[in-house]
Image: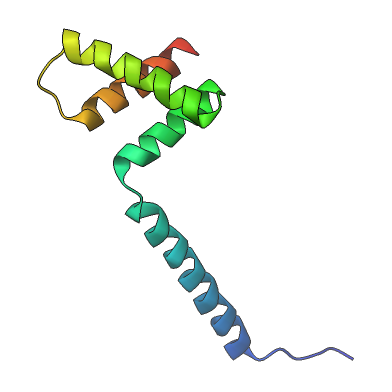
Length: 88
């Protein structure tokens, strides 16, 4: 005998899934861009976070000397783009 599932249950499951995805997206978006970029750098270089952040800081300081006047996010984006490019 086949069990009949109420279509309302499917709707309820879909709504719950959308709410969960929305909460995750909002929490991710609230993380400051600088932190997201720093965390991505640490993940890509495979160093412990403290060492990765120190290496990133030195690289950003060098870029600030050669390309002055940009916001910090620009330098972080630049370093990540270089890293990704060099890994290809």
